Image (cartoon, rainbow, N blue to C red):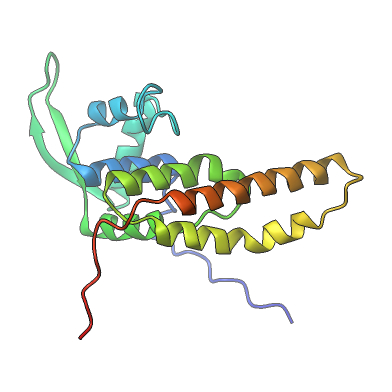
Length: 191
């Protein structure tokens, strides 16, 4: 007998934030920002923009959706350089808690390593967070997929591509695990 499907989401439950929304929320958690400043952080020539480029209109849409979902809130308003006032936003307490969980959650598919996993690594580094837990969870989450694809037959080009891609992904995760800097904090010592 198949397990019962999960209950449908309540109409009041906001949808899961998009990748862009998570990244915008993470930037707000670093420091309250206005949309223009967030957009500058996500240009293609920046550290994060090399992983995920987001154009300014999508940044403003993400801000609006984060506020509507109760994950971000206006912090204060400051005069614009040559235009209207700018509203700086920051995460809500709920937004920070959800962001912390998202930053530690592994991606579901090998294809998501390229952007979502790498951006999580970068955001963890920027926040001074130890990414060991994320990397360990990611290796465990994709372990069954790696094993299944390692046994894929050689006679099909699609299976061959997936097997080679999985091997490269596993190698990448091994390299990342071996090159993580030490944890910037130490857990409390138990007497």
